Length: 315
Image (tube, rainbow, N blue to C red; front, side):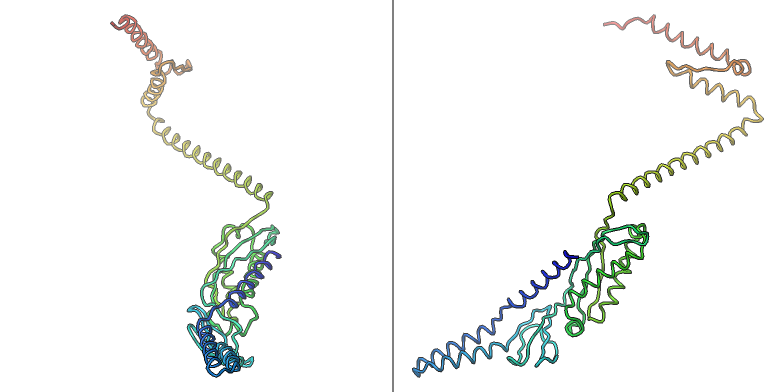
């Protein structure tokens, strides 16, 4: 809250300095012409009173010309009563009768605002930073309906953000940013429309949660991923078992195919060098695997002897 007050105070001071620091070349020209005319008349008539008169005339008429920039509208009051908007460009007012209390900027304005230590609907403290894009569409209302429309829009945005956070859970706040931004834009626009202000968009920059809650959410996410991995592994086991079940139906009434498949599995295991396989004796007797194993061993021995007789390669 103090930081927000300091930002608003700085903006008001900058706006005041800009309005006071306007250089009106037309007013300067009128004043210089009056000074020169008074100087020459005083020198020609030898009467210094003419210089004083022309200085007063120059000061009076130099208050009449005003200049508004292309994106500005000047609010004119005549003896305290609103008379209309002037600008952009050069325009004239009645000196000391008509005044310009404010120049309304009609460009798109960006305002940053925040909701610090605000509780969500599930009682989680969060800090939310956002940016508001808005503009004045009715300069008359902005000047007459609210004291300081810039400050009013900032406070409306901040209170609206706090209101929405209080009605939203942390999960919705983290996942549903687009919905929250649209809802916040509609809420601020509803409050600021009577002031002649329209909101174009709202963007949430950051949502900060306590570090302890971040650790808890990280552990929860890790547990959820582990759970998903276990579920996927179990589903794979079910699919594999289903495929084995379908394969068993093919071998159920065909013992020859089953024996060939068993012999193929045994051969694939024995052809690897250094492979060790334990085969039950019942399988050897029922499928005649003894001869197959002997043939495989004999082939392996023959290959080894052939390599030994070949000897070392000639140099």
